[in-house]
Length: 368
Ligand code: IPM
Ligand code: MG
Image (cartoon, rainbow, N blue to C red; front, side, top):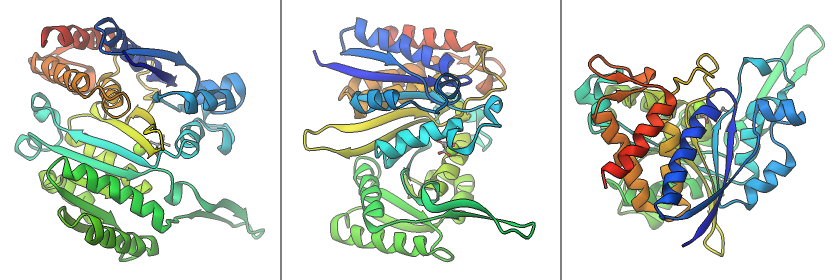
């Protein structure tokens, strides 16, 4: 049996609570002999700042790059509002993404049938929804230089963020999107703002050329990012794969999450390039944040994090069948009427974080 090393970075707020439920699922995978997953735990975000004065320590970075995969909970909270910009909790997450070169962020938005009424859209708009947002994660305005606030000396300041993309960055993220589309409904929407941004013009050009050269069998649509945002709430089922830059991807994925019923349902995988040994660096995390308002109360929804672990099994540990089973177990407990507070519904049973984790693990055995 293959042994995998998984680094757990629970982080802040509800991060540790939802990660605890992943540990329960890991114990099930190990006990049932699907694989041997060895875990280590370290700090990221505000808790790392409190311990080391840095949002992630160099030692934790070394552990992350030595691991077969990393699972992250969430970072941030009002406690660290006054911390210097470079040490703010989010800097830990951004360093992981950048230093491990996790350029491809996969954010699947799937509407479980049982949750179609929890969506802010009408049931028929979202029932059966299955979108894959492919977000570029190591470039664009998140990392472009200069990035600064300058004092102009006349009582005014000037803030600059820089949106920058090079050809290879667009090529490699578009290739991920086309490859994924081939395994799905064979359709890609490439979202940018070529009508106002030079990066949008280049994005459009590179995606068009790559499509013609290598992926002409996939149907490609170019869509302006603002129109994409509107279409996502008008008729979301028209989309299969959406490929877009770092900032648009951040926003479009939060928007898409509400189609599925709750931000607490959306998992994600952040993948690097595959090296010569076939190994690919990867980090898995829920799309939601640290939710300080409900932290420590045992009411957070662990499903996005458990579903992120399923993505880890699929993309990093080659355990696609176990991943399918976890996703079926989630659908099963939702069908049975179990809900956390964020997706509570009349006639359903609202349970806490740990109960949801235990119910999913019990379902893993029941569904066989
Ligand atoms: C996300 C988050 C992060 C981002 C924050 C926490 C830095 O919103 O993963 O979507 O903006 O990328
Ligand atoms: Mg976001």
